Length: 242
Image (cartoon, rainbow, N blue to C red):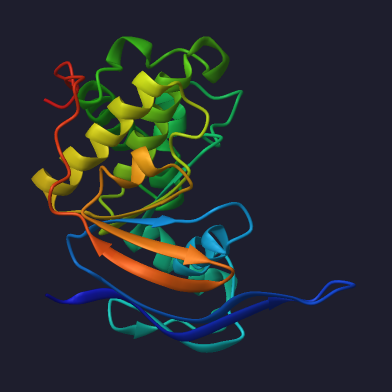
């Protein structure tokens, strides 16, 4: 299988009053179409690793390749181009814009890509409909439940048709039932559309829904576990994806 995210001996230190060596020589290959979780406790380096994968943060030494292309000290414009073209992000806190409606939030990445207003509205409505949220399109984030907000965020991540979705604690702000629904949704996207998905989590229940679990501790990868027996959840998807 073709590796789409490749890290070789990647190091990262934050230079504060006390230098903090967060990543200590990370080697990792994530292949196209894999559904991977990066699991570790708070302070293990997992979010820093995700930020490097998403070109939101730079690394100090080593090598990171995205789709075969070396990612190193890019200008903000080049980094934004890669992100817009290849990567969709999902965050624990949803990162929705409070004064924009659900559909306007989903449209936003297409606005940055220069897609016409009519086309981006049509596409955003299609994605909200697929996620069972069409009737909530005109609602603002404070009128939506946590699960609905995360589905809006997933629609926003999907609308640019990215090759890779990076999800940072995507169930962290959700109750257990909604967490299962969100993970089922990601699993479905991975299986049906072949999107490469990387989920950062500290919850074993979330990690167990993925096909491969990368354990990270104190800035080092401890073990990589193939998880071929991950099972369907007891909660159905409720026909969320059409």
